[in-house]
Image (cartoon, rainbow, N blue to C red):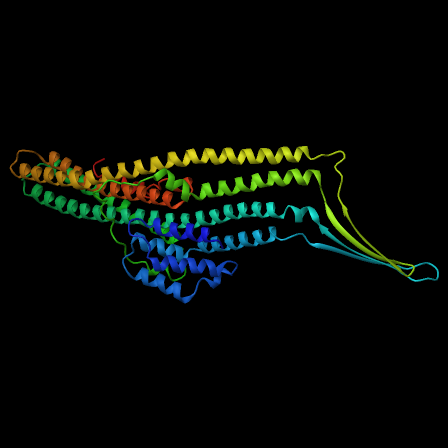
Length: 465
């Protein structure tokens, strides 16, 4: 395997993990496994050392970084990517060897008395031999494309693991918030029932509290139900199977977004330099251009071969050598040359278009990450504390009988919505940041589309609406 493939995948494994990347030891081990496992059966990768590491990571509250590390160790798609690299290596080796030598031998026995005639000869595909340097260039371009594809598959596994962790962490925090809101609503409803029984509040005020408590109960049930698909998505993203899913017991909470703005210098150049899409396009272009050069020779000298023969006839040996080829009398290969030329120009145009798209995608990803960071910071640091102060003021006004139960319930709903929105905004930021990190690591732009919250019913559950 080339150093390029190792660097692409090792860099992807490190960068996609976010601000706190996978440890250097893990990246080194991954690179060593890639060198060792090319062409080796997948079962050879699942050794006791790697599985012991998975158990150790699952024994602690799971973080986003640990999720990425587990997926890179454990997921079958990563092993499949290793095997794809083995296939790429085999294809390259097959393409860079000269053609086979043909051998023929004949014994011609006379009908009447006399010695048998012996004839044997050797043949070599001279066209393949002469075009071997260019064939190696074609094979090298194809290998670059195959290695980039394998790197993209590994990055996709890492991205899926990180996104699944973010979604489950957000779903759990939302479920915790809804549980707290439900407990508070049920307690308020019980207090309102007691006050109504004592004749201290009107029936409509009691009913409003009961209605809010019922809505809070539904919201909690929705949030709890949303945990199931989010957890299952994480299990799949980590490649957990057998007894492993039962080991996943706890998750870390979503960390707060950073206060400092996102600053990535030369982001467009970095995205293009690391892009697996662009590497695949470049490899295809290299192969197409070299194939165009081969096409001219192959069309004019098809089936060109070098031959040597030795013959015994009547006790006398004769030998000689020569060249054979299929003379292109009627077909000068213009169609094949036209096809190869169009293929090369198409590959060049596609590479140019891809560069434009990657530059735009880089700017979009950075803008999205920064915008979601600012929104999350505002919701967490400004709107959430203000909603608490507004609610506390509403409670004081209610106790002073300056507002009624309806106004207090409105503020309670607003307080709950502020908490839910803060969790959602934080998750949105980390999704956008993960997409930006993945793009910088070289993943195809199609993989950096932000994953949506897998539990819209929990996210949109708002008591009172």
